[in-house]
Length: 222
Image (cartoon, rainbow, N blue to C red; front, side, top):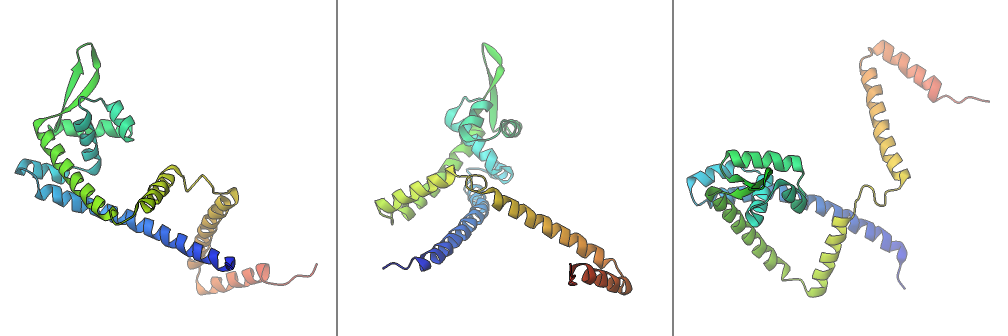
């Protein structure tokens, strides 16, 4: 017979471990951005590209990838296809134009619509970034080969649900939200009280202690 009383604590422990692992993965991906940047600099085809790679951000590389894959392409399409805000796309493309990584062209019958293309320099950076992605994909493929088909299907399904689920709004009850906000408020109020007490000298601190004791900790009969 299954002892269900032991199952929930074990499940809670596994969930806690999963959430901690997710946080560690997030931190690792952040640190790997620096590693990827170093790889791009070290494997640049020339000194000009290597110097530019020092200034390139992850978002700038993503926008350049979008242009390299779909050129000529406008800012609205980049925003929709890759989930980057229009304002961010506008700022990044402006920087890429200034650095002569991409160029602007207009449609003959529509001078208002701006299209982006990679320059020769932009193509070099685009190909370099693609080589990095190919290296990462190959490494990930070798890692995942150790799992069987059913395990991979579970991972695909689980990651798909994680991407589609909001952990803030989906199943959070109003009571849980109120409790979290109340805890935050309580901490702020306690900090305010401690700040006021810290301003008192020893004599007035004794008075405050006596008042608190009389008001909140004395027993009164109705």
